[in-house]
Image (cartoon, rainbow, N blue to C red; front, side):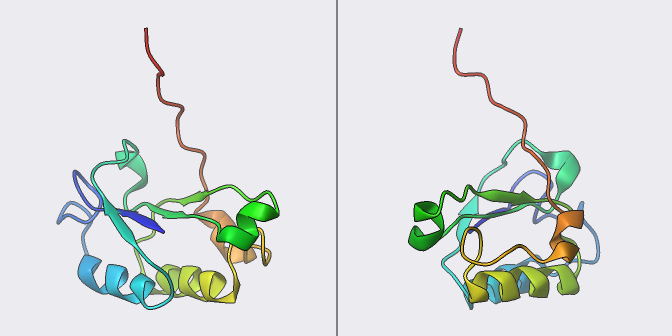
Length: 109
């Protein structure tokens, strides 16, 4: 997983979220990479769930989740990842509320 923890995500701009606790909880179920700004500040807090090797073999792609600002959402993500995550088990319907497509980045001139 990747958690954004820079400009807006992980900062006091997103009030009422214990960012350290959220990161610690996710680390209980999978490795977590803390990233600088992912350029989707309007979706703060952002969590990107990467598929496991088995999920990638099944064709799964990373799932971008935004507005992950309450403990219940964090628990839903942790439960999904614990069960296998993208490509291994279906995404719980409740997480559909958080899914978004990140904007494509420019690849050069």
